[in-house]
Length: 326
Image (cartoon, one colour):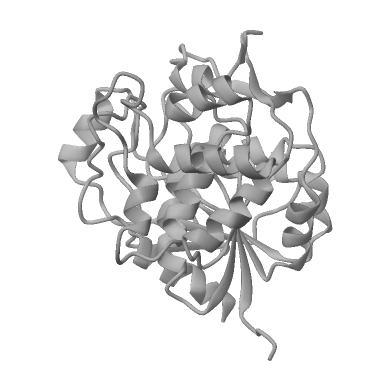
Protein backbone atom coordinates (compact mmCIF):
# COMPACT_ATOMS: atom_id res chain seq x y z
CA UNK A 1 0.00 0.00 0.00
CA UNK A 2 1.59 3.28 -1.09
CA UNK A 3 1.77 6.37 1.07
CA UNK A 4 0.36 9.37 -0.78
CA UNK A 5 1.09 11.86 1.99
CA UNK A 6 2.66 15.15 0.93
CA UNK A 7 6.34 15.47 1.82
CA UNK A 8 7.34 18.54 3.81
CA UNK A 9 10.98 19.40 4.52
CA UNK A 10 11.71 21.83 7.36
CA UNK A 11 15.10 23.54 7.39
CA UNK A 12 16.18 25.33 10.56
CA UNK A 13 17.53 25.08 14.08
CA UNK A 14 16.10 23.65 17.25
CA UNK A 15 13.63 26.15 18.67
CA UNK A 16 11.91 27.33 15.49
CA UNK A 17 11.76 23.85 14.01
CA UNK A 18 10.44 22.46 17.30
CA UNK A 19 7.47 24.83 17.23
CA UNK A 20 6.70 24.20 13.57
CA UNK A 21 7.12 20.41 13.66
CA UNK A 22 5.00 20.13 16.81
CA UNK A 23 2.09 21.57 14.86
CA UNK A 24 2.70 19.86 11.51
CA UNK A 25 2.87 16.35 12.96
CA UNK A 26 -0.86 16.57 13.71
CA UNK A 27 -1.54 16.39 9.95
CA UNK A 28 -1.25 13.43 7.53
CA UNK A 29 2.05 14.53 5.98
CA UNK A 30 5.56 13.06 5.76
CA UNK A 31 7.95 15.29 7.71
CA UNK A 32 11.72 15.64 7.40
CA UNK A 33 13.66 18.06 9.59
CA UNK A 34 17.10 19.18 8.37
CA UNK A 35 19.32 20.65 11.09
CA UNK A 36 22.70 22.45 11.18
CA UNK A 37 25.87 20.78 12.43
CA UNK A 38 27.56 23.91 13.80
CA UNK A 39 26.09 24.19 17.34
CA UNK A 40 28.88 24.47 19.92
CA UNK A 41 27.23 26.09 22.95
CA UNK A 42 25.70 24.83 26.20
CA UNK A 43 25.20 21.11 26.80
CA UNK A 44 25.70 20.38 23.10
CA UNK A 45 29.03 22.19 23.03
CA UNK A 46 30.29 20.32 26.09
CA UNK A 47 29.43 16.95 24.55
CA UNK A 48 30.87 17.97 21.17
CA UNK A 49 34.16 18.94 22.80
CA UNK A 50 34.36 15.79 24.93
CA UNK A 51 33.31 13.19 22.35
CA UNK A 52 34.08 14.83 18.99
CA UNK A 53 30.65 13.88 17.62
CA UNK A 54 28.30 16.01 15.55
CA UNK A 55 26.33 18.45 17.76
CA UNK A 56 23.08 16.95 19.01
CA UNK A 57 21.09 19.93 20.37
CA UNK A 58 19.14 20.94 17.26
CA UNK A 59 18.46 17.33 16.33
CA UNK A 60 17.28 16.53 19.84
CA UNK A 61 14.74 19.36 19.74
CA UNK A 62 13.40 18.10 16.42
CA UNK A 63 13.20 14.56 17.80
CA UNK A 64 11.26 15.90 20.78
CA UNK A 65 8.87 17.77 18.49
CA UNK A 66 8.14 14.62 16.47
CA UNK A 67 7.79 12.32 19.50
CA UNK A 68 4.35 11.44 20.95
CA UNK A 69 3.14 14.16 23.31
CA UNK A 70 1.52 11.78 25.78
CA UNK A 71 3.67 9.80 28.17
CA UNK A 72 7.31 10.27 29.14
CA UNK A 73 9.15 9.82 25.84
CA UNK A 74 8.97 13.47 24.83
CA UNK A 75 9.65 14.63 28.40
CA UNK A 76 12.81 12.50 28.48
CA UNK A 77 14.15 14.23 25.39
CA UNK A 78 13.64 17.73 26.77
CA UNK A 79 14.53 17.05 30.44
CA UNK A 80 17.45 19.15 31.70
CA UNK A 81 19.41 18.38 34.87
CA UNK A 82 19.27 21.16 37.47
CA UNK A 83 21.86 19.72 39.85
CA UNK A 84 24.79 17.33 39.93
CA UNK A 85 28.45 18.32 39.61
CA UNK A 86 28.90 16.93 36.10
CA UNK A 87 25.28 16.70 34.94
CA UNK A 88 23.95 20.18 35.80
CA UNK A 89 22.94 22.00 32.62
CA UNK A 90 23.04 18.88 30.48
CA UNK A 91 19.97 17.85 28.55
CA UNK A 92 19.01 14.17 28.88
CA UNK A 93 18.09 13.95 25.21
CA UNK A 94 21.58 15.16 24.28
CA UNK A 95 23.10 12.45 26.48
CA UNK A 96 20.88 9.76 24.95
CA UNK A 97 21.84 10.78 21.40
CA UNK A 98 25.53 10.89 22.35
CA UNK A 99 25.29 7.40 23.87
CA UNK A 100 23.52 6.07 20.78
CA UNK A 101 26.16 7.59 18.51
CA UNK A 102 28.90 6.00 20.59
CA UNK A 103 27.10 2.64 20.34
CA UNK A 104 26.31 2.61 16.60
CA UNK A 105 29.26 4.62 15.33
CA UNK A 106 27.60 7.48 13.44
CA UNK A 107 25.13 10.27 14.05
CA UNK A 108 22.80 9.43 11.12
CA UNK A 109 22.49 5.86 12.38
CA UNK A 110 21.97 7.14 15.94
CA UNK A 111 19.09 9.29 14.68
CA UNK A 112 17.53 6.27 12.94
CA UNK A 113 17.69 4.25 16.16
CA UNK A 114 16.33 7.18 18.20
CA UNK A 115 13.41 7.47 15.77
CA UNK A 116 12.52 3.84 16.49
CA UNK A 117 12.92 4.19 20.26
CA UNK A 118 10.87 7.38 20.51
CA UNK A 119 8.32 6.39 17.83
CA UNK A 120 8.80 9.55 15.80
CA UNK A 121 6.31 10.86 13.28
CA UNK A 122 8.93 11.97 10.80
CA UNK A 123 12.67 11.99 10.12
CA UNK A 124 15.51 14.14 11.41
CA UNK A 125 18.68 14.61 9.36
CA UNK A 126 21.89 16.55 10.07
CA UNK A 127 22.64 18.62 6.96
CA UNK A 128 26.15 17.15 6.79
CA UNK A 129 28.07 14.25 8.32
CA UNK A 130 31.16 16.39 8.89
CA UNK A 131 32.01 18.23 12.10
CA UNK A 132 32.57 21.92 11.33
CA UNK A 133 32.72 25.33 12.98
CA UNK A 134 30.58 28.26 11.88
CA UNK A 135 32.43 31.45 10.92
CA UNK A 136 31.07 34.96 10.33
CA UNK A 137 32.80 37.83 8.58
CA UNK A 138 31.56 41.28 9.59
CA UNK A 139 31.38 44.62 7.77
CA UNK A 140 34.29 45.96 9.87
CA UNK A 141 36.55 43.07 8.69
CA UNK A 142 36.19 41.24 12.00
CA UNK A 143 35.83 37.45 11.83
CA UNK A 144 34.33 35.29 14.58
CA UNK A 145 34.65 31.50 14.53
CA UNK A 146 32.15 29.55 16.71
CA UNK A 147 28.38 29.57 16.55
CA UNK A 148 28.14 30.28 20.28
CA UNK A 149 30.48 33.28 19.99
CA UNK A 150 28.52 34.60 16.99
CA UNK A 151 25.32 34.22 19.04
CA UNK A 152 26.67 36.11 22.04
CA UNK A 153 28.49 38.87 20.11
CA UNK A 154 26.68 42.20 20.40
CA UNK A 155 26.68 44.12 17.14
CA UNK A 156 28.19 47.60 17.25
CA UNK A 157 26.47 50.49 15.41
CA UNK A 158 26.67 49.87 11.67
CA UNK A 159 28.21 46.42 12.12
CA UNK A 160 26.59 43.45 10.36
CA UNK A 161 27.41 39.98 9.08
CA UNK A 162 28.40 40.06 5.41
CA UNK A 163 29.52 36.47 4.94
CA UNK A 164 28.81 33.19 6.70
CA UNK A 165 30.79 30.00 6.06
CA UNK A 166 32.14 26.89 7.78
CA UNK A 167 35.63 25.82 8.77
CA UNK A 168 36.46 23.42 7.20
CA UNK A 169 34.06 23.25 4.26
CA UNK A 170 31.59 20.36 4.26
CA UNK A 171 29.14 18.77 1.83
CA UNK A 172 25.47 17.97 2.39
CA UNK A 173 24.66 14.33 3.01
CA UNK A 174 23.10 12.30 0.16
CA UNK A 175 19.98 11.75 2.30
CA UNK A 176 19.48 15.50 2.65
CA UNK A 177 19.96 16.04 -1.07
CA UNK A 178 17.35 13.35 -1.79
CA UNK A 179 14.89 14.80 0.75
CA UNK A 180 15.11 18.23 -0.88
CA UNK A 181 14.71 16.71 -4.34
CA UNK A 182 11.62 14.72 -3.38
CA UNK A 183 9.81 17.35 -1.26
CA UNK A 184 6.39 18.79 -2.06
CA UNK A 185 7.15 21.85 0.10
CA UNK A 186 10.34 23.17 1.70
CA UNK A 187 10.03 25.52 4.67
CA UNK A 188 12.65 27.73 6.29
CA UNK A 189 11.57 27.67 9.93
CA UNK A 190 11.67 30.72 12.21
CA UNK A 191 14.78 31.03 14.34
CA UNK A 192 18.22 32.66 14.33
CA UNK A 193 18.66 33.84 10.74
CA UNK A 194 22.34 32.97 10.45
CA UNK A 195 22.98 30.34 13.13
CA UNK A 196 19.84 28.26 12.55
CA UNK A 197 18.84 28.69 8.90
CA UNK A 198 21.76 29.99 6.84
CA UNK A 199 24.12 27.65 8.73
CA UNK A 200 22.43 24.89 6.69
CA UNK A 201 22.65 26.79 3.41
CA UNK A 202 26.42 27.42 3.56
CA UNK A 203 27.09 23.68 3.50
CA UNK A 204 28.45 22.77 0.05
CA UNK A 205 25.71 21.40 -2.20
CA UNK A 206 22.76 22.82 -0.26
CA UNK A 207 22.32 25.85 -2.50
CA UNK A 208 22.67 23.71 -5.64
CA UNK A 209 20.09 21.20 -4.39
CA UNK A 210 17.59 23.98 -3.67
CA UNK A 211 18.19 25.66 -7.03
CA UNK A 212 17.63 22.39 -8.87
CA UNK A 213 14.48 21.54 -6.92
CA UNK A 214 11.15 22.46 -8.53
CA UNK A 215 9.58 22.50 -5.08
CA UNK A 216 8.06 25.67 -3.65
CA UNK A 217 9.97 27.41 -0.87
CA UNK A 218 8.23 29.02 2.11
CA UNK A 219 9.83 31.24 4.75
CA UNK A 220 8.41 32.06 8.18
CA UNK A 221 9.70 35.49 9.19
CA UNK A 222 11.01 35.91 12.74
CA UNK A 223 8.94 37.77 15.31
CA UNK A 224 11.84 39.72 16.82
CA UNK A 225 15.27 40.97 15.77
CA UNK A 226 18.39 39.52 17.38
CA UNK A 227 21.04 41.93 18.62
CA UNK A 228 23.85 39.52 17.82
CA UNK A 229 22.81 38.95 14.20
CA UNK A 230 19.88 40.96 12.84
CA UNK A 231 19.89 44.30 14.65
CA UNK A 232 17.47 46.68 12.85
CA UNK A 233 16.63 44.01 10.25
CA UNK A 234 13.21 44.33 8.63
CA UNK A 235 11.23 41.49 7.07
CA UNK A 236 12.72 42.44 3.68
CA UNK A 237 16.25 42.27 5.12
CA UNK A 238 15.61 38.76 6.44
CA UNK A 239 14.13 37.72 3.10
CA UNK A 240 17.04 39.13 1.10
CA UNK A 241 19.55 37.11 3.12
CA UNK A 242 17.54 33.90 2.76
CA UNK A 243 17.27 34.37 -1.00
CA UNK A 244 20.98 35.26 -1.26
CA UNK A 245 22.16 32.07 0.43
CA UNK A 246 19.50 29.74 -0.99
CA UNK A 247 20.01 31.04 -4.52
CA UNK A 248 16.26 31.13 -5.11
CA UNK A 249 13.29 33.41 -4.82
CA UNK A 250 11.01 32.49 -1.92
CA UNK A 251 7.54 31.52 -3.17
CA UNK A 252 5.57 32.17 0.03
CA UNK A 253 6.42 34.40 2.99
CA UNK A 254 4.50 33.96 6.24
CA UNK A 255 4.39 36.93 8.62
CA UNK A 256 2.66 37.39 11.95
CA UNK A 257 0.24 40.34 11.96
CA UNK A 258 -0.89 39.99 15.58
CA UNK A 259 0.22 42.87 17.85
CA UNK A 260 2.96 41.93 20.32
CA UNK A 261 2.12 42.78 23.96
CA UNK A 262 3.92 45.85 25.30
CA UNK A 263 5.26 43.89 28.27
CA UNK A 264 7.07 41.55 25.86
CA UNK A 265 8.38 44.43 23.76
CA UNK A 266 9.81 46.11 26.89
CA UNK A 267 11.53 42.88 27.95
CA UNK A 268 13.21 42.60 24.54
CA UNK A 269 14.13 46.30 24.46
CA UNK A 270 16.48 45.68 27.40
CA UNK A 271 18.49 43.51 25.00
CA UNK A 272 18.14 46.08 22.18
CA UNK A 273 15.86 43.71 20.28
CA UNK A 274 12.62 44.75 18.62
CA UNK A 275 9.66 43.40 16.60
CA UNK A 276 10.61 42.69 12.99
CA UNK A 277 9.06 45.45 10.87
CA UNK A 278 6.82 44.21 8.07
CA UNK A 279 7.98 46.25 5.07
CA UNK A 280 6.83 43.77 2.39
CA UNK A 281 3.80 45.85 1.44
CA UNK A 282 1.78 44.85 -1.63
CA UNK A 283 3.89 41.75 -2.08
CA UNK A 284 1.61 38.99 -3.35
CA UNK A 285 3.91 36.31 -1.93
CA UNK A 286 3.11 37.35 1.65
CA UNK A 287 0.59 35.57 3.89
CA UNK A 288 -0.27 37.50 7.05
CA UNK A 289 -1.90 35.69 9.99
CA UNK A 290 -2.30 35.99 13.76
CA UNK A 291 0.44 33.57 14.82
CA UNK A 292 1.53 34.43 18.37
CA UNK A 293 1.63 31.83 21.12
CA UNK A 294 -0.63 32.73 24.05
CA UNK A 295 2.06 32.47 26.72
CA UNK A 296 5.78 33.29 26.85
CA UNK A 297 8.44 30.60 27.01
CA UNK A 298 9.64 29.69 30.51
CA UNK A 299 13.30 28.67 30.40
CA UNK A 300 14.56 25.95 32.80
CA UNK A 301 16.90 27.34 35.46
CA UNK A 302 19.72 25.00 34.42
CA UNK A 303 19.61 26.25 30.83
CA UNK A 304 22.37 28.86 30.60
CA UNK A 305 21.82 29.80 26.95
CA UNK A 306 19.72 32.74 25.82
CA UNK A 307 16.27 31.66 24.57
CA UNK A 308 13.38 33.45 22.88
CA UNK A 309 10.61 34.57 25.23
CA UNK A 310 8.13 35.03 22.39
CA UNK A 311 7.28 32.21 20.01
CA UNK A 312 4.85 31.34 17.25
CA UNK A 313 1.80 29.25 18.05
CA UNK A 314 2.51 25.78 16.65
CA UNK A 315 -1.10 25.01 15.68
CA UNK A 316 -1.72 28.34 13.95
CA UNK A 317 1.61 28.12 12.14
CA UNK A 318 0.97 24.56 10.96
CA UNK A 319 -2.49 25.50 9.69
CA UNK A 320 -0.98 28.31 7.60
CA UNK A 321 1.63 25.91 6.16
CA UNK A 322 -0.88 23.15 5.36
CA UNK A 323 -2.98 25.68 3.42
CA UNK A 324 -0.03 26.03 1.02
CA UNK A 325 -0.35 22.37 0.04
CA UNK A 326 -3.97 22.71 -1.07
